[in-house]
Image 1 (cartoon, rainbow, N blue to C red):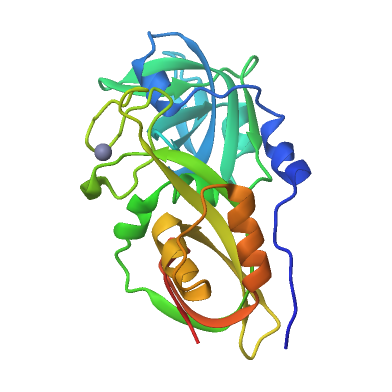
Image 2: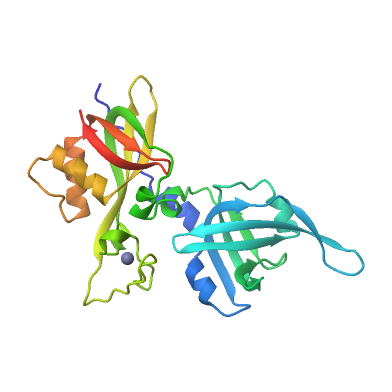
Length: 273
Ligand SMILES: [Zn+2]
């Protein structure tokens, strides 16, 4: 069966999640900013504590508090949702992506946090799935998968959302994505124009599962993409331009294959059948 399924996320859909926040601050930048700085960020919830009631005055007045830990490409920071934010969002769960607008940098037990104000802060649940951004922003996720990877067989039908990112050149950093300041979060190396970083790729693959009508999507990075490319186009190496990569996969797919997909939904190996 040959069927070409397009699993690309349209720019409109991507936009929906981003229009809410003009220019989010990175967790890294927030940690470095002074106390009481007004901050906006978006990310994925990696930990959440049940709703609590905290005594806030001697008169016994209590306020609801919901503590979440939010992760973006640069790090993780705790956020305190108070009052109406806590009650409105008490159904939030690990894996949900939210944006926080006009929060405030604070410190709790000597650790940076983001505080929210009932009247001025806005918390929005994002429809955009940030999984691929936050879970697997680089090949480190690929390397650190703890559960044993699973092998999935099917027809590889598509490759989409190909994006380039700046990565660390050190081999031990496994193409770790650089921060906006061109620093490698793993080894701390700073890149300048004189010592250019490596261009790494992230993309989405669509796999039409054998014995099922389901098309599974997963994330693929440079190294696995190269492994696949050398099988699809023997003797050639991955082209430099995104357009050329897209074109060559479009021409070569669909293909029956076996993909090894890890717990972070990242393709770690591909064998064409
Ligand atoms: Zn590095």
